[in-house]
Image 1: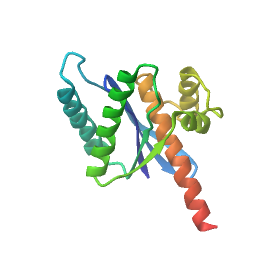
Image 2: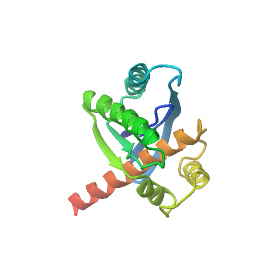
Image 3: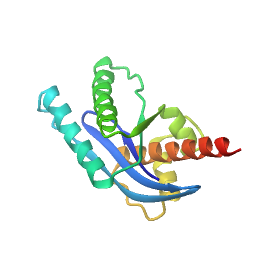
Image 4: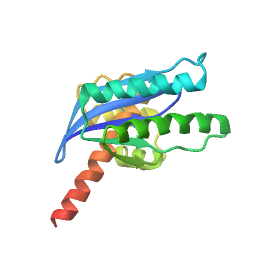
Length: 163
């Protein structure tokens, strides 16, 4: 199954596409989508939507997963993150793709083993889990971690149904 992971942000949204077959994971692609801070919010959201649609069209995932919002000290940052997350959820839903949603601490725990892991630890584990993968940046690494978390949760659900 091809899975798209998204780490939403208004300035930079990370994305990662993996293929999961049972316990096997294979990297397909990853990158970072950016919007111009100089543009008005509606234009930035429309730009982000078009970029997410392009990733979906190119990779045709069967499932998607999006990181949930964490509350920043700055409420404006949290609102901007929420707008970007809403775009990601909407575009996936419009494409008819079921979306899993995961808290940042759950993603870190699933990939690193602890919910308090640093970004560098997540990046290092992604490189171990997806050997040879060239990661486009920290947001792309987080997106791949979200995709891997979703793959693990789907595999667990599948095995529980089969038991």
